[in-house]
Image (cartoon, rainbow, N blue to C red; front, side, top):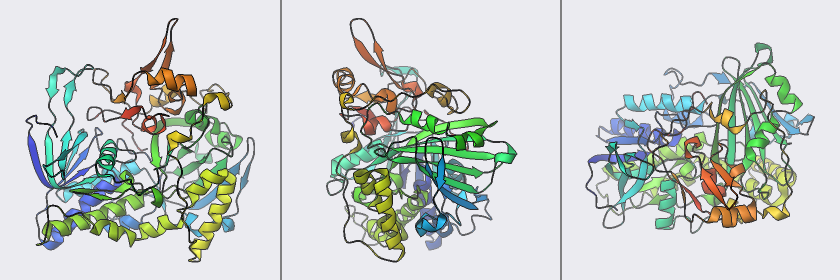
Amino acid sequence: MTNIQRDVMHYDVLIVGAGPSGLAAAIKLKQLAHEQGKEVSVCVLEKAAEVGAHILSGAVIDPIALNELMPDWQEKGAPLKTNVTQDEFFIMGETKSWVIPHWLMPPLMNNQGNYIASLGDICRWLSEQAEALGVEIYAGFSAQEMLYDDRQQVVGVITGDMGRDAEGAETAQFVQGIEIRAHYTLVAEGARGSLTRALESKYGLRRASSPQKYGLGFKEIWRVPAEQHQAGLVQHSLGWPLNADTGGGSFVYHYGEQLVSIGFVVHLDYANPHLSPFDEFQRFKTHPQIKVLLKGAKRLSYGARAITEGGLQSLPELVFPGGALIGCSAGMVNVPRIKGSHHAMKSGMLAAEAVFHALISAEQSDNALLQDYPNALKNSWVWHDLDAVRNVKPMLSRFGSWGGMLLGGIEMWLSAFNVRLPWTLQHKQADHECTKPASVMSMIDYPKPDGIYSFDRLSSISLSNIAHDANQPCHLTLRDQHVPISINLANYDAPEQRYCPAGVYEIIKQQDASYLQINAQNCIHCKTCDIKDPTQNIVWIPPEGGSGPTYIGI
């Protein structure tokens, strides 16, 4: 905790992150307060310039949590307009594809009753509902570090300074970060958050957990000709262009006014450092089936984001003195369904109930953990959903895409008949530990982008609406300045040049030496470098509030 004198704001509850879990928690807190006739002040901090600007998801939305939180969401104008009408799953070859019969798919993979939507738009709408209830939401402010009292209990956060130059010196626009103090702090910053990592380290929250696993998800929005659009059509695939040892797959969702959401997920436990997830996505779009869909279409937007994939085995302890982890800060994604927003919302709602009860309890103890929250989660449908698929990701890692899919499918079918296998497979390695030396892996020759279906990184991030002042301290920090060349380049052929979806990292080769150039202004906040760097030398921290992409409708 710093001794610098700062301005201070006080609230009952502070929520870091205006995603689905954070906003659901804020709304639930205010609902409970109104029902009980209590005053509970709630503040939500969001590092993006506006709510929803950093939100990226497929997204096929299961409305179960929204139904519980706000049963009249349709009357209130929630932006869920396109019902899923057709659900297809493909195995992709290089030039052909094969449909898996619907009757072979486990029931939990069914998308009937769900909606195709923009999760960013949903978060914008949720923020309006929260503000109408009295929640204070401050966008454009990054939570830079946790705030602790003398007992090492969390009492809030310190927001980042604004107006420092690239060397860290104060400029004429300098504004010092403030302290935001609260009785309880809910951390809802999404996958691989910097505050979450600090809390996990300080309190040993991961000591009983498997390593967290991640995927890198890409998404583009295209407007297609009317005759190629089938509103409500949901398609997923496995196979080409990934080989059997690399996990991942695609999604194609038709919604709105001739809009198609097309995306690709690559599991980050891949071994080959020559692999480029971005280029695998671009190559996928050159498949004949996808080219027919995109013929004459226009690409409107692009983004990428890390996804938690570890499941129940990788959940950390969810509570710490003074607060809790909710949503994807903990890791709530159902990997085979590629869904997590409904789990995130429900976790926020359950955490809100625990916080509210603690605030009004006559027996409230300043040192008490919010143990009601993890207890309630374990008795909820979230836990049931995640438990049913808990072995799917470990099976994919152990047996490859085809063996893992077969064994995982069998277990998911058994769960449909309430048969639970008596074992839970653990994750053996963190994703960065799976990377093998470049010398023992095959090179991958990616085709040049054609500018029609496939594109390069720079033209892609131009559609991400990035706002980033280059004259600010670099938020992509290196623990050791020598590692990028002495280890990453020497042993792994500098994989950061390929796993980054935004062209942030470049090896500049000169006659006498090489060095790593970091183009931080390109960063779209996916966090992949923080996850996949072989020696964990790259550390992602939030830049100035308001920096990064501004995703619109994505």
